[in-house]
Every structure is written in C-alpha cells, then in structure tokens.
Image 1 (tube, rainbow, N blue to C red):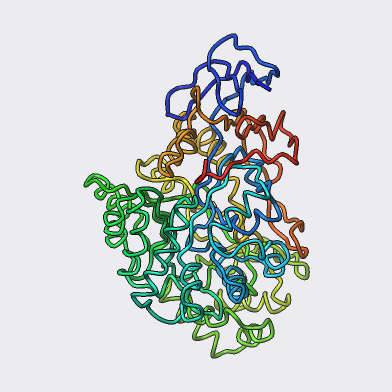
Image 2: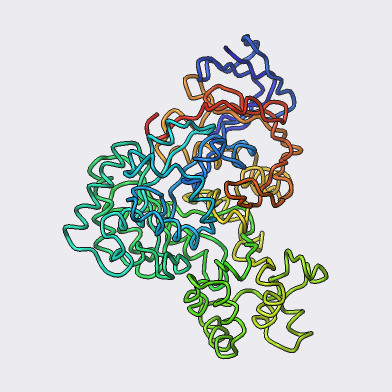
Length: 548
C-alpha cells in the first residue's frame, strides 16, 4: 500500500528549514514530497513536524533483541535505527565454553541480569559474528539493526581466559584480524573497543580490551581499512588517550567516534573538544560523542557500576552478597575505600541521594552529605550504613556527568560531535536514556532554545547516518528509505521513568514508556506507531543495516 503523510512541516534532516508539504510513501521508500499527493492511506500530520526516523548510535541491544525484537523503549521514541555492540561488548563471537564468562562480563560492565541473559538469548543459534547477524535477521526486528563486532568478545574467542591476563601473540592478533574481516564482510557496522577504567569483567578483572596494547589496536582496525568500509567506536582510557585515538583513525582511514565527551568533574571537556577540532582540521574523520541528558545512575551497592573505578569496590566485583556486606562493615575496608575515592574522583556527595528503599521511605530524596552530617560520619560511611540497613537493596541516585546545562549546550551545538551515549539496552535497572531523542527535542529545542528544530533533527538523523555510512537513510527525499517520525514540536517529551519487571527470568528495568508528542512512526514504509499508539506489534519491518 501507499501512504500519504498529509499537511505536516517537513524537516528533511539536512538542517534546512521546515517546509509545508505532503510525503508519499510507496514500496518502503519515499516516492514524492510536495503538495496535493495521493495515496491509498492518508496519515494526518497537520500542525506537526515530519522528520526522518531518529538514529541511536550507542546501544547495547545485542542480547535484548532476542527476547524483545520491538527494541523498547527506543521504538516508542521515534527511533527507527539502532547500533549495538558498543564499547567492545558484542555477544559474538562466543564459544559455548565461554558463554558464562560473557554473561558475567555483561553483568558487571552493563548491569545485565545473568538469569535474563541465560534465559532470553538463543545462544545455540550462533557462535561466529556472521551467525549472530543471521540469527537476529531470522527472528526479525521492528527497527533497523546494526552492530559492531566487539574487541572483548573477539579477544576471548581467540585467547580464552588468557584474554584477561596478557598481551596477544602475533598469531593471535592475526586470528583476531580474520574474525573482524569476516564480521565486516558479513555486515558488521564496524569495530568497537574500550579502555574505560570502570569496565571490569568476569572475575573482577579488567575487560580483555583493556589488556591490549596500542599495536594490537592498530592491527585490529586494518581489516576495516583494507575493506574500505566500517566505522570504529572506542572508549578512551589508560594508554588510549586522544592522541592515540587520532593516530588510530589515521591508520585505519575510517570514520571513528570516541567517548566520553561529557561534562565530568576533573575533565576538561572544552580542551578535549578543541583537540578534536584540530584533528578534524588536519583531515581526521574523528567524532567526539556526547549525551543530551544528565547521566544519573540508580544503583544499589550490590552492583555499584559507577564506583568501580575505586579499587576497593572493583575487588568486590565477583563477591557474594555476604562477602560484599562484610567488606562494607569492615572499618579497614571503609578507610581504604575512602582514601582511594579521593585519588580516583569521589562522587559529588551533595548530589548523591536515596532513590528507592522499601524499609526507609523517609530517606528518599535525602543526600549523603545531609545524612553524613546528621550521623557524624563521612558521606561514604553514610551510604554504606543506609545500604546495609536495607540488605543492600537501597537504590541511590549517583550523578555522573552533564549536570550543568550551560556546559552541555555548547557540546550539543558543536560540529564534529555526535549525539549518542544513550546506552540503550544496558544498565536497564540503573538508568533509561533511550529516550534521548524526545528529550533533545523537548528540552534543548523547545524549552532551552539551544538548538533549532531543523538543527536538532539533523543531529538525530543525517549526521549519524553519514558517519555510519548508511546510504539511503537519514534524510527525507525521493528514493530514500521511508524511516519517518511525525511529532508535535509543542508537546514532544520523554515522559517519566518507571520500573517494571517484564524481562525473561523476571528481570526488571527502568523504562520511559509514555512519551508525549510522538504521533506517527514508519520503518521502511510500514507504520509501527499511529496517533500516538503502537500498532501492528507483530510487524518486523526493520532491516539489517550492514546488509541493506
């Protein structure tokens, strides 16, 4: 059937001002844009904006896609394309013998429920990365889906448990190159890795990518250079600083995005952005990656991801709840953890508050600084005591980055900076930033007027599409794939977060499941949302991005 989206203001994704026009969709593509168009079915867009579907470049839907092919909550917020496998944490390649290692690593670095992973992923359907893509394609997806082949997964596949312990030999690097070469040929979007100090994997050890040296990084991007396709995504840290990242991009001669470019305590984000500008001016295809939402984790001290940069917490990564509680009670451990926090950037204690607790609802909203003053102890000790009183079930709001809008705004406006870092599909019990697109349009366009509507749409559509090499997507013009979001600029907003339990093995998550202003969404010409409501939930119109 053909559709005509009637009477909206078309923002084509290029940054050009909106134009009143109809959009005709036929055969999964945009057939025409103009006035007085006719089609089999008419969709009213009067008074609304018509834009390309939004692109989420930083997700961890690698596992969730198996039990939730609708890819929620992204599909509720006008997103029509997602890219998984970020930070080096694809779930393929993986040998049967290494599945538990993979699950434990995802538990620690991405707060994924191990029981959910074990029950929800069709592990027997794949081992290699091409087989993984085949398995996802066979099941079908509601949104367009792409993925990076991840450094940590590749290293474990080649080196086994020794991937966590040592540098790779030349023959092992050659084997990893072969795996990446096959993945890119089969349709992987690119290669991803991480050197982040918070990324602690199975057994409480640094994830395997953090054990690699610069020579290994250089070798592993060569398959992309040789193929002339694919992009690179890396998390900076340790020996992989910005100079090394820029050199990596030059060696690969492929587009590269690096994270995090956030407003973090102790991090000069302005200097980092200027360094990125200099590298781009010299011809580097390098892109910082930022986020538009304040990054606030709702953590328990049973799984304190943001505190893992402190060695005393990192050493408890694989501890039992009883062992963890015993450490938290130990005065010597407390003293050591407190000293280490000072050296590794302590949390902003006035902003650390109690988020959820069944036993002490009177503490909700109270900050650790306030409780520390009342209890005559340090904020860390107050936090530990509150958690222990509640059997480690208390959730705390831990602000990590992007707290000051005056600092974030210039990053959103900057050229050479992609909007991403939503972490959709990861840390699902701790945060939900998959609603970043509706937040950008509601908060930064309508309320703060930091971006124009046309510019925000460009940042959500054609800019990431061009970086990823998604030909035929990201703009509205005849012949392009009909990925379309129709929204009301006056009301669009992400809505409130709520905690639900709808994952396999009774896994829980935070969701933003009631956005406002998202009226109609089409993926490859097929409606998945009409008049603000989901439709045709069994439809799987998404395509595999690296194969489309």
